[in-house]
Amino acid sequence: MADALSDADSAESPASENKPPTLEMVMEALAALRQAFDSKIRYDNGRERLIQTMSEELEQHRNNVHQSLLRPVLIDLISLYDDLTQVLGSADAQPGATDRLEFVRDTVEQILTRNGVQKFTVEGSAVDRSRQRVVSTVDTPDPDLRRKVAQRLRPGFAWDETVLRPEWVSAYRHVETPLIEHTGEGAAE
Image (cartoon, rainbow, N blue to C red):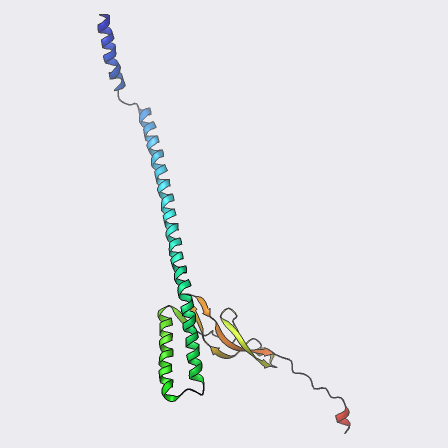
């Protein structure tokens, strides 16, 4: 009979392990799941921010590579535009050749425009050192004309708000007119 009791005890032991979970056990399991879920959400958010940052850096790198490769070509096209304008403005330009040169110059300007380069002149008469380069000066006794544009020599060119070549201008420079000194010798005669 002792064997029968031990068999009954052993039969009840597995049954006691299969008893329904208590509310406390369910709450612990739910808290563990919530913690794992929050950890996964934080991980996913961090990973998404990292991917977004890397994507922005890659786009910036692509733009910088594009700009660094294209910039010298654009500068050369601007120089060609300037040379054609200078030849057209000279007295040596022949009437038949003038039309062809104007066509080539206009084509160069269209190429620049298609690549996002805009020709500009600065509004107003005051010199803007950030967008203009003073390449020559004109002396004037009028102090009000100081640092004002005397003549626009070449237009400027900008690409994506970056000045590729500033507008070339001639600016007034204020100079005092020397006073004529009378020595008195000429007045006595």
